[in-house]
Length: 232
Ligand SMILES: O=C(O)CCC(=O)C(=O)O
Ligand SMILES: [Fe+2]
Image 1 (tube, rainbow, N blue to C red):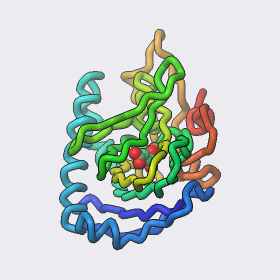
Image 2 (image 1 turned 45 degrees about the vertical axis):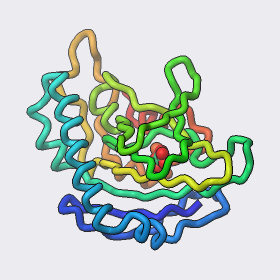
Image 3 (image 1 turned 90 degrees about the horizontal axis):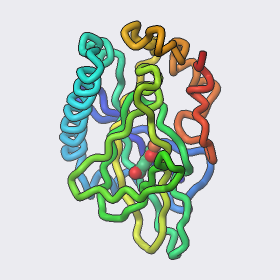
């Protein structure tokens, strides 16, 4: 499946990058123009602004809950936001069909918004059951990414998720993916390490890891390769 990829700079200027997952998960491709003409580039720009504001608020809340607010500026400065609009082609069958295979995002944080009311996002809960996520219109699904989970020394986890499609309607979603900036060393802060909480992960540069791993999707993966890569 080909996804069109809008990259939003911190000043919310939109550039467009084609983005192709390695395996063809769906027969259809997404003409970027469909998404632009349905939602409008102004809408995308204001979406980015809103979503990155929300991302900051959530980041601050998480840092405050661990007494780590002094790291807020460093984390913001070391983050790049990518906006990506996605179309999942209708499978035209009532059999659940894979839209995106199970994975965790390697991001710091991901904000997802389903653009039409076609459901499909599923999250694996702690009991190993898949839960349908049916967000109400105009709401975001917020997912902690692996990079942040590692930075937090595993205090919070990132969720495995996938997209399953059925029926005869296409699904559109849009995501704001906050990535550690190229070259930034993701390092567990000293405040999260003590006798009871040993350091679980070595510092890592995501860019280095991504030279050898697919940027996002690992089909069938249920073990994080990023965590394995940097675990102590
Ligand atoms: O489209 C969605 O709801 C999920 C997309 C997703 O998980 C991803 O692109 O990493
Ligand atoms: Fe994802």
